[in-house]
Image 1 (cartoon, helix red, strand yellow):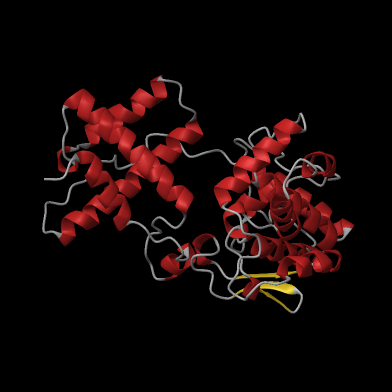
Image 2 (cartoon, one colour):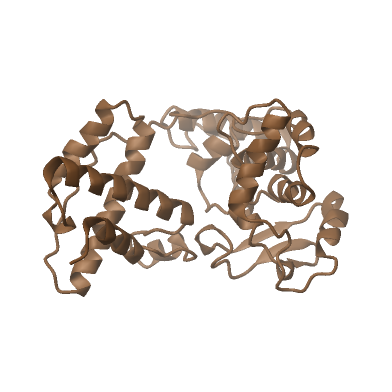
Length: 332
């Protein structure tokens, strides 16, 4: 009979839908499952820690022995240890994935289906303004660290900064995805987060650099032969060499910088002002269009906001993400 640790691994595997769009699930009336490597890694880690804790504290040796009481005591244990609200919410999400995966596993093998998480979440939902901070890298910071990077790492930064790609996406983009002055991924499975379609116009000032990346490569070759974990590691090392701090921004700092840059490029001053007002109201808990009188200006702004989201690999109407990615019109 499998150990509780092995059961965790098998249950998480049942939830693995990496490369499949969450949007596709929602459109089919299904709950999203695990759609990214990061979420899978976090779910496994949270599941292992929970399993070890209940095994040590309550002699629970199989997942089917779990009860909501074990779950509640574990979350309160983490809370008493000083875990942040955001971290605890992520743990709750991960354990709910684990529960659903174990239910799938049990159904498949004709075993009793159990529920061990609480009916309602124990940690209150985040406020809209919680943990909101400017996470973009400035031009000065990028200029300081770029000289501390290898040639391939500099190329990776270019793709994150100029095209808004995630580090995982940079490591998987192939030559065939570049065509007619744009990055075009019609089938994103295994390349983009959630398998999302992606279309990004390549800026004119980037064309020569992209052409150099393409030289001597076959269609199926990666644009930059570098792993995503290496990108993250080398980014941190370059900041240390430059005597600068990432302040937890990691590679996402380039995507934030991209979002701010695109707001300035696409939106005129009136639209930028409307965006600023809309995000302020959103942060106050109001509807995004609350108090908007210039409907045409609002619609023009929103169309451009949605385009930027599309380039970043986000869906439409994501004012929650705009509040994080576009909530600053500083000079970068």
